[in-house]
Length: 124
Image 1 (cartoon, rainbow, N blue to C red):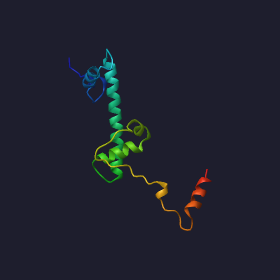
Image 2: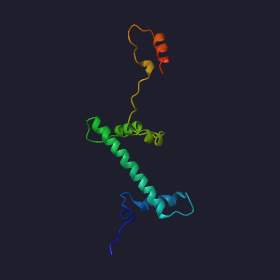
Image 3: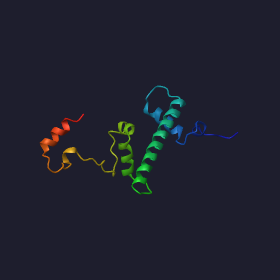
Image 4: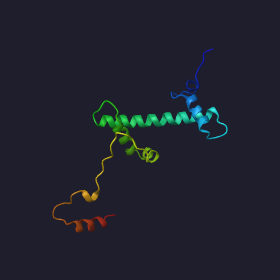
């Protein structure tokens, strides 16, 4: 009879016993079954695959072959749900997302800023 790990039996790559040990050590509940560890492991694996896929797309757009922290930041901040989940996270050595305020964009020649603001307020 072959021995199979809990990760292999559940079809996951991440180690289920390590997550189980962390759940027990954290004392989140008096009792903790392996079903919760398997579910949490599957969620973590899915999130990491999603972030890596979006980071790969960002690296390809920048004509790079390797994923850098900058690509991870761009992937997270450009995805609405991941940005909501990881909104307060600071990624080291990644920079900031480029953004220019409307006030800093030059207006068309011939219009004063007052006329431009009036025209913008009339748009629906």
